Image (tube, rainbow, N blue to C red; front, side):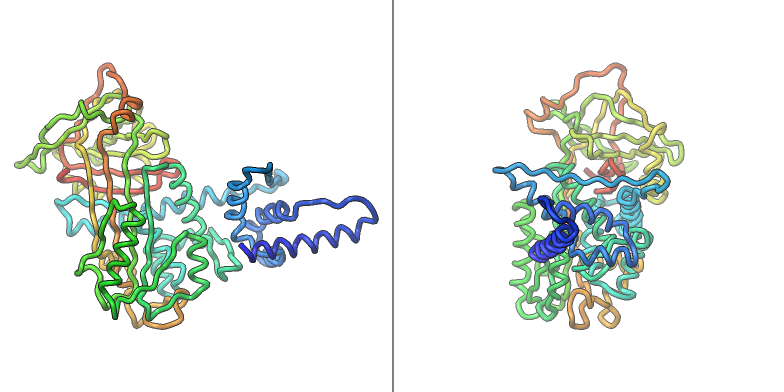
Length: 485
C-alpha cells in the first residue's frame, strides 16, 4: 500500500502544478485519489501505448483493497466516492468481467468432470466427491509461478487457456498478466460473501526450505489470493513439517479438522505440498426438521440394502424428468437463494455409472434450466448426509489428464516461485467435508414449510449424484456420487 500511496501523491502534485500553471487566480481543490480510481476503470480496458501511459500514473493493483479499507474505517467522518464510465452509444462497452466469470465457471466445470471421471475408475461403487473450485484455486497458486511448458500444461488441463486469451489484465507490481488470477479471486470473493457461513475454504502451500520463495511471488500471491506460502524442512525435520501442516489445517478449519497428514502422507523427499480444505453445511430455504426423520431402507444395489436416517419435508421445489438418460432432477435452494443442491436420481433400472459417464457441463446447465425443471409440489425424502473425504494425493489423477511437467524434476519450471532449479509438486491434498442434515431447532422452525396438496414423492432411496452450485453462474462448488450414505 505504501507504493500506491506514493504513486497517488506523485500524481496529486503533478496534477496540482499543471492546474495551477494554467489558472492565474482562484481556489484549487480536487481529490487526486478519486481521480486515480476513476482512471483505473479506464486502464482495465486500455491496451498498448495507451495502457503504458496510464501506468505512468502509478500502481493500481491495490486500489480495491485500499478503497475497501477506507470505506470500512470511516466511523468518525463522512466519505463517499463514486465513479462512472459513460460512452457514446456507437461504442459498445464490452461486459468482460461477467463473460469472463461465466467462462471461468465453464472451465471449472470441465475440469471437474475430467477429474471426476478419472477418479471414478477406482471408485466404481464407493462414495466419491470433490470440490473442483477448491482444487482449481489451489493449483492457481502454483500456476502463477509456473513458466514455459509447465504453465501451458496446467492452463490446458484446467481449461484456462481460452480464458487467458480473453482476460488480459496487466499488473505492474507482479510483472505479468494477472487476468486469470484476478477473475478466480473475484469469483472466490463473491462466493465467500454470498454463501455467508455455509462454505469455508483455505489453500495452503508448503515448500521445502531448500527452495526459498521469491519475495515478489510471496507479495503477489498474498495480494491475489490472501495465501501465505510457507517454507518447511521436509528433508531434515519431517515430523516438525507434518506438525506445521496439521497446525495450519486445524487453524484454518477452526479445529473442525484436527489432522490432515499422517506419517505416510508427507515424506522427507517431498518438495512442494499443496493443501486445500473446504467444508459445506447447507442452510436451506426449507429446513429439514428432526421430528420428521425416519429410519428407512436405502438400496445399495439390486440385492442389498441398509437402514438410513431419511429426512423428510414437503414444499415447492424445481423438479424435472429427463428422457435421456432417464433421470429425475431436483433443486433444493439455500435460504438466501445464492446456492442450491441439485440431486440427480436415476430411474429404477438405470445404473449410476451410466449417468456419470454421460453427464457434461452443457447437459447439467440444460437440466437445471426451464422448461426442464418446473416449480412443483414435492414430498422430499433424502438421507442424512455427512461426507468426509481426504484425497491423499491427486497428482496421479492430474498426471493422467496431462499435467506431467510440474511433477518431473528434469522439466518442471517454477522459476516464478523460487530461483533454484528442481522444484516439483510432490503432493496435492484436498480435505472436503459436506453435511446435509436437519437444521437446529430454531432455524428449522423459521424455515419450515407446511403441507402441500398432491405432492409428487421424490424418494432418494438408491445411489444418486449431487452438485452444490453457486447459482449466479452455475459454478460447481461440489460434485459427488453417493452409493452408501
